[in-house]
Length: 213
Ligand code: BEZ
Picture 1 (cartoon, rainbow, N blue to C red):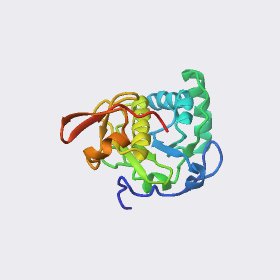
Picture 2 (spheres, helix red, strand yellow):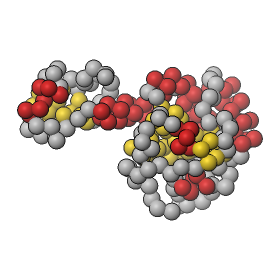
Picture 3 (tube, rainbow, N blue to C red):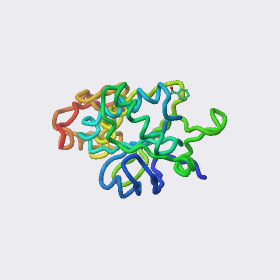
Picture 4 (cartoon, rainbow, N blue to C red):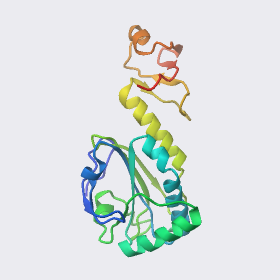
């Protein structure tokens, strides 16, 4: 198993999920994707995470992003646990949870880190663009629930910078000023970024976030 890196094509797979069998690439279609693993069903932190993702359904939908969860538990376990998530987190889980009992997908995506736990997936996150390239990889320990606001923020940055010659600075959020890509010459700036720019250093040029196209 080769280590996955940014820019690699996300491996395709066929898997049983709580929303039926999926062929991952076909299921993604033209959408952006988030594939994230959790250690085990019927555990407290995972329950809050999957509840939060369900509550963020509209946020992901607005960003043309499909979300799939994964653990090495079976389908019946996932289905029973979803009832608990819906009840305790006041939501409706409406995204697929992959039942990866044979660890096929976990191994493809290197989600089991044996020195952390030999059998269970860690909290991995992969953000995948519409051409199926991996744009972000995160790994969290079992004891730390993820910040899904941060994932939404990264998707916003990725979607902005995919289509404009921009990058986003530390702690950037929607509406904040952006960094002009070093590949853009000063002469090109007025046409590309008509809202103007500030040159703090020749290599650090800021511009207001362009209106979305
Ligand atoms: C949890 O989701 O609460 C959890 C799962 C595995 C290990 C520790 C915590």
